[in-house]
Length: 332
Image 1 (cartoon, rainbow, N blue to C red):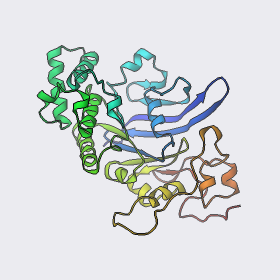
Image 2: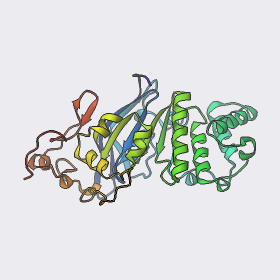
Image 3: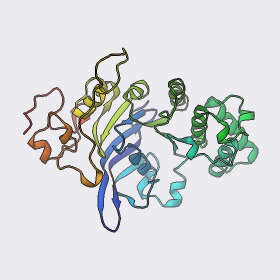
Image 4: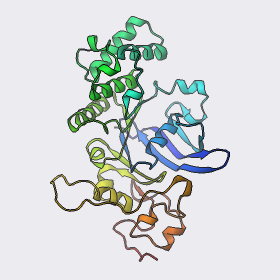
């Protein structure tokens, strides 16, 4: 990993807009991805993790969702949000690849795995069929698919869940991107296969110098895989910093709550910890800090003023008026 940023996201915002209403879904998200870094974006379902990353590559799932502010600076490529649709086709696949939680819904069921990868290579690289097919076989070997010469002719339904996910990774790597976005790629897999996929991603980072954004709700996976962590809540980044700092010395009460909710590796018999309450409805966000209705340390200031993401210490930022470990006033 180097200190050179390959992707810089600044104040990225996304809103839902229709004839009757408009409300912000992603609000001022900022982070930096360095070359060879694995950044984990973690939070509860609905926190905005996947929406943020879909906005980066301008693949929002609805025409009613609009990027309303911010910039996404790609090294050597300018602001992704300012590119024309034609220019964006040169970014997706060639500069940024993406793998999804459910590969079956993103792989063509009527085209063999090998052909899907080879056609992508031909489209982006402008090379002949034979060379594209040879490159495809090499990629299948890299992602650990056995007997690639035979399996290249198989279809999605002929692959197991773990093999489908490897095939999805192969598709994303077909054009040798600089950045890989992995949207909860191990959630539906059993523990053994999950560990294999995580090792594969680490190996790809080490061998290719790949930068990875890994979306998950599992802090155990974050600790195993990632270098840096961005914790999201209700469309905002509430804590951001090195993995060891964020997990061992959380400053935001939401981060501390997520850590407390993790099952004990020692097989404890006590009650499972939970964060009280529910995440807010995006159409009806609370005033002030969005986490304050669920936070035991909140007071009148938290209900009134939204905190900014400030460095509590070098490289470790937190958006909280009363960070964990500091004196707090009683809730009023």
